[in-house]
Amino acid sequence: MVLDKSISLRLSGVTVDKLKEESKNEGITLNTLVNQILVEYLQWDRTASKAGWVVVLSDVVKKLMNKLDDETLYKIAISTADSHKDIRLMMTGDDTIDGFFSILRNRLRKSGIGYTESHEKGMIQFIIHHNMGKKWSYFYKIQHERMLKNLGQSSTCEFTENTLMISVKTG
Image (cartoon, rainbow, N blue to C red; front, side, top):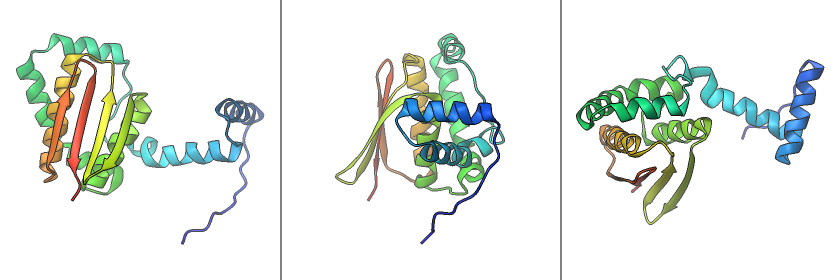
């Protein structure tokens, strides 16, 4: 059992004021907010850029995607999915379905992409609403199917104009 520990930090007054304002806006304690920030740093920020993630405006990605034909999108999706093992290992140390889901959740959250996750009848299902258009949905579908296949997972992926649904058997 891991016990909570206390530490003292010295922060600038401006930083403390902004953190207090944000915690008030979010309706959570300052302690909870700072814990969330630190967990997010440990789960994503400290390794994401080293693993190759970059911040790009969604409109730029959407416009680039719309310029590519389906064959090119397919090839890029497959090659990036096939290199995802290295990313999982670097970011989570876990080349399993748990590492896959950890990165998926964190990436969606950091990108501000809405999703729901459900667990029932031996299935985990993600419904991802991205507002990036059909080309992105197609790319996402191919990429995630391949990543899951590479992990030996039985899955189905379906998409619409702005949504991807991933269903993975868990048992």
